[in-house]
Every structure is written in structure tokens, then in C-alpha cells.
Amino acid sequence: MDNKWLARRYEYLTAAEWEVLVRGVAKGLTNPEIAEDRGTSRKTVETQVHAILRKLDVSSRTEAAIYAFRNGLMDEGGDEP
Figure 1 (cartoon, rainbow, N blue to C red):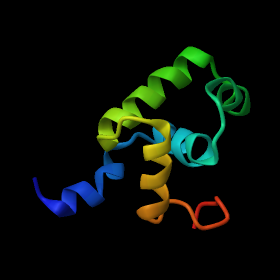
Figure 2 (figure 1 turned 45 degrees about the vertical axis):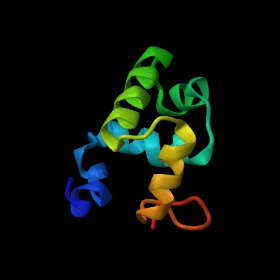
Figure 3 (figure 1 turned 135 degrees about the horizontal axis):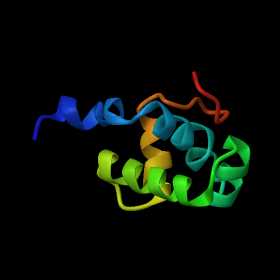
Figure 4 (figure 1 turned 135 degrees about the vertical axis):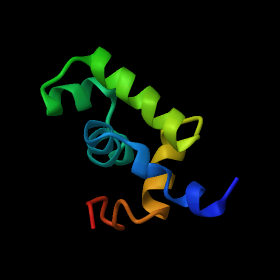
């Protein structure tokens, strides 16, 4: 597999998945907290988190957060750059 693809897997996320990753998962929020913040259902967030893990090819929320930081999707303060 090409290393360039591995580093840019985030480009396959939908806009909603991106928001859930950057504004929720990477900040350590729970699914209910993300759902409340986004004004959506817990089930929708669960589906989006599952899609994020699959598309980023990671096995946990922690790995997804690390991926976000390592690939410049978040700055050191936990905000979008």
C-alpha cells in the first residue's frame, strides 16, 4: 500500500465524519456528548465513529485521535489548525 494514501486517509471522510473526529473524538468526548453538541442522535454518532475508524484503518478512538494530531488535523491545543 502506498504511504501517501496512508497519510491522507482522512480525505475519505465525509464532512460530518470530519466534524465528529476533529470536534469530538479527538477531544475525548463521548458519543452522547458529541450527539448533544451536534444536535443529532447517539446512533448517528455511533455510525459516524464506526465509519471514521474503518476509513482511517484504526481500531480505537484513541488511535483516531492520534491520527488526527499526527496528520495536522488538530493543533497542540486541540483546535483545528
